[in-house]
Image 1: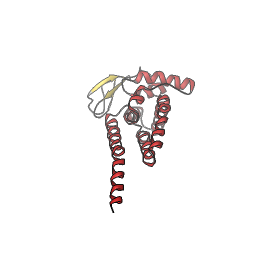
Image 2: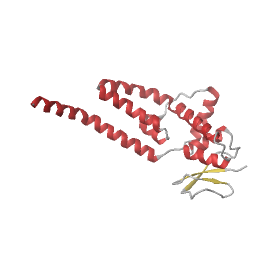
Image 3: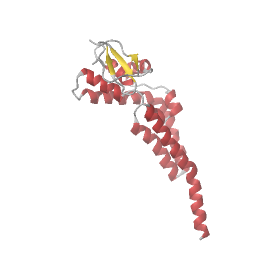
Image 4: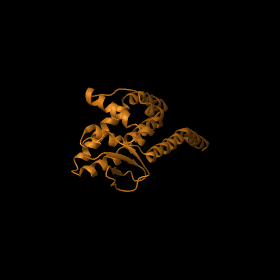
Length: 196
């Protein structure tokens, strides 16, 4: 049985206790306790793979016990869709940005009203993240890879992505600019048509 060391860095590689590894890590952090890699809590720990692993381990145990985890997520509250991009939930992050923006373009009140859904999202963000993590881990389990390859893939598919968070910031900034200047462009177009 190997003791895993979570390795973070440019290649997000996995290092085993015997010293073998794939790629060259920038830094290493000790991962889950040395248990069978098929243990669901170890897989979740590998998936989360950052300093929040203990928090999500506690939440996952509660999720497994009760079937739900309702609680405030401060990161989701402070950063909204950017948190989703950071957690590699790109589709969900894009939807959480685009739906209110599209509704705003239809009518500003619809866009503002759609933002009232966000507090509900903040309450269920942890549960949704654990659900998606469980689904991704299940898909990786079905691939038939060796345990080392599987654990490596779980670690790569999970964790956080600063590139994703930056992409979320850029998308939100561009949409905010479009919303801020959109009424101005409409106003200029109406003035031009009124002069003809």
